[in-house]
Image (spheres, rainbow, N blue to C red):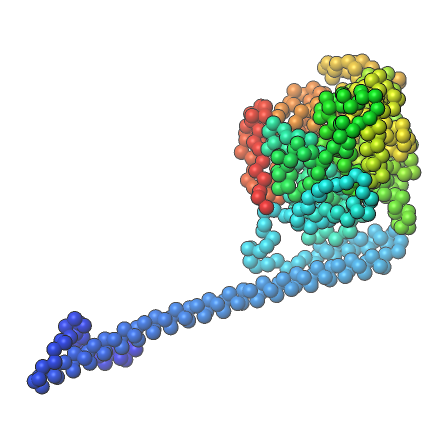
Length: 575
C-alpha cells in the first residue's frame, strides 16, 4: 500500500467532478480524457486499499480479543471442574469417615480430623467476580427447593395417604446451605403461622414480622450450621415455613408468598352454624378472644403430616436459639424403632426446663406454655398461651378436634366438657380447646415447658404491681411456697423464643430504656429483633444499613422516632 502511494504521489489527482464527460475528436482531447480516466482509477484503488487496510486492523483486533476471552472462559471452566472435584472428594471423605467410625471416641477423633481436612482443603476461588453466587437473595430453605407451592381444598375427612402426597416446596428468603455444611439433618421441621384477617398496616405488622421470624428460624437451623462461622447454629434440624391463611385474609397474603411461605387454605374446621350442643358455643364463639371462630384455623397445623413435628408460632415471635431439645424428645420413639443412638434425647430430657419439675412421659405429642395472666391463681384450669405450640401432626388428631368443636360441649360456667376449661380469654377457641384436649382427654401426652425459656413474654408473675423492682401479690401460677420465678429476671442468653406481647411489637419503636425490671429484658429482646432484621437485609438481601438515627444502639437504624410512625418498613426484594 505504501509503495503504491509512493508511486502515484507525483501524479496530481484530479477531482472526480473535473473529469470531462465530453469526448472530442482531436488527439489532444482523447489524451486528456485517458489521463483523467487513469487518475480516477488510481483514486478508486486508493480508497479500496484504504478500506481493506482498516478492515484488516479491525479483524485482527477482534481475533485477539476473542482469543483472550476464550482463555478466560477456559480458565473459569477449569476452576469450576476443580471446585466440583473438591466437593466430590470432600463427600467421599465424609462417607469414608462415617463408615469407619464405630465408637464414641473414634467419632470425636474422626470428626476433628474431618473438620481440619475441610478447613485446609478450600475450594479454589474464581478469578471472575461476576459469578452466580453474587445474587443478593439466596433462596432455598427447608429441605425443599426453590419454588412455591400452594395447597388448596384440604379435606379434613380424607385419609392420611392422600394428605401425605402434598409435598411442600421452598420456604424462606434466607441464605442457602453454607458451602462447608456437610452434616445431614435429622429431620425437617414445619413452622407454621396463621393469618385470620388483614391488619391495619400489613406491610409492618405482617410482612416485617413474617420476614424476621423466618430469618430467625433460619439462623437457628442446620442451614446456618457453618462450622467456620462464629455465628453458626448448632442445630441438627432443617425447616420449612407455612402460612395458614383464612379466606378473609387472602387479600393481604401475597406478601407471605413473596417471602416464600407455603400457603395453606385456612378454612374454618367447622362452620359456626354446624356447631351442635345447647347453642351457647355457637352463639358466643364468634366474639370470643381475639379472632372468634377464626382462631380454630391454627388447628390446620396438625394436617401438615409430611413433617414429624410442626411448631406453630405467632407473627410477633422471635427464635433466639435452636429448639433441638424438643425435637429430639418428640422423635425419640422413632429413633428407637430405627435402632438409632438416642443419647441426644436422653440428654435433652435431663436439661429440658419444665414447669413444676414435672416428669416427661415416654412419648410426647406436644410442648406448650400457659398464660397465667388470664386467670386467677386459684383457678384449677389454666389456658394455653396461643403464641407457641410444638405438636406432632396427625390427621386423626385433627379430626378429633373437628368432632369436639362440632359436638359443642361447652357450658357457660364450666367451659369445655364442663370441666373448668373456661371461661377465660380465648377459652372457646385455641387457648381453651388445647388444654382440654391434652389435660383432660389425653393426659400425660403433652408437656408444659418453662415460659421463661420458651415463649418468653416478660410478664409479671404476681397479682400485685412491681414498684422499684419489688414484686408484690400472690403467684399467678398458684404456687404456695411463694417461689414463683420472675421471668423478667432471666438473662437473654437463656431465652429460646420470645413473644412480643407485654413488650409491645418491635415496629412500635419503643426503646424500653427506663432501667426498670419491666423494661430491661424487653429492651434486650427488642434489640435482638432489630439485629436479626439487619442481618436479613444487609447480609442476605444485600441492602444498605438503616438510616434512622433514633436510638440506633437499639433499633439499628430502622426507627426515626418514638412510635409506629417512626418505624422504617422493610422493602422485600422481588424474586
